[in-house]
Image 1 (cartoon, helix red, strand yellow):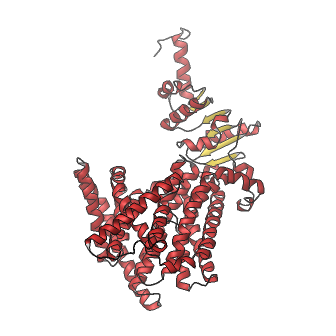
Image 2 (cartoon, helix red, strand yellow):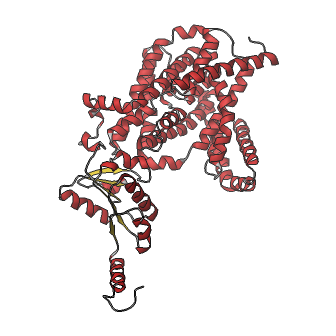
Length: 549
């Protein structure tokens, strides 16, 4: 099946698409991400049955899948989503990369891998999968939950780390190994090319791209073609700078991510990307030598267990120390406890550069299949697992010093939720707490939560899941001290949905009519407005002189 002719290429592609389709159906029924199915299809077609072998032509086509994959990830890389969960996402993402890399390197050396092989294994283990994280969260409709946004946030942080890793790898490949002198020169050239390329991207995204896409906005097909044009221009620019095509595609997507047409572009590119990505992951499985499978099972099992436990523990500790509940940290950790698509890409680049051999690729492929499958299933029963672990007391070691596990849990009933820690909000929360009420305060600024005697939560109540996780339906009262009209209106509507009385700080009298339609029980009005309101009522009843306004 190694025919290099046109018929051989078509037949090989046909086998790969058929294998991906069949295993993809089984994976969907088993509620597994398609990436794991594609890897298994490649193992079946290649090392297991020998139905096909990897050819250079297939390799070039599979590289297109990587280009489109990184282009799409760049399009989805919203820095605003990272800011929403702020330091917690950055801390969890970077901690995973550093600690998992260190631990993975030690395990690799202990299992007999060379220093270079251990380093590639360790880095591959540390890189999660944004694709898988989004998939498992979407399946449970928890993408907008607090733990969901944290998981997506630290996955996006790791995507940024991948950008640096690919640059370093390009430099090492240019230096033809890990020799200090040649690798240093190659790395310096790669970094210089990276700076040049990034500068060009930033300039184009600010001055050229908005005008071009504003001109093309009248035709959706034109926008699609121009986005692909920009993608391949950046791929060519990366090649000219001595960098990888994947890096150019990533930067191309990142530069388009802030344009108003991004959402439409994502939907248009995904079908095209899906075909090439399937070919890429199937080809990874096909390219593993049959002799490498037998000796890779035990290292894969050990490393998979390390990834599942290590990433969950690191995330739980980072989230707990960020002031969020241990359930939030546990679920966020389980959702991202897998080896991602960039791990396979990283190792594939190492193999093509001659830095590592097929055994490393086999271990990473098997570990990827195991961790993707395990993390997906574990997240489905995440709440039950959390209750078991908490009952056993195995989560206490992750709490910050002086932190009470019960105080972090959102299982409240008969409590008062106070939102917005301005001067008014703090006085209300402190007084209610003094009177013996169970009070939970919420604010988007963690600094405003310090020093309060009651339970606190750093979060944005515009996300439905934030209030739901804090027991909105079981609350006695919701008080908003905010002066944000739209957010107060949304809060009043959600309180009305679950039948919980709410007290709203009305900015002025003009907003009261809309809030009254949501059955707001109490209003807090500025003193001047209250006087005007009472005067208008008294005049209307003829109890004061003058006309009612």
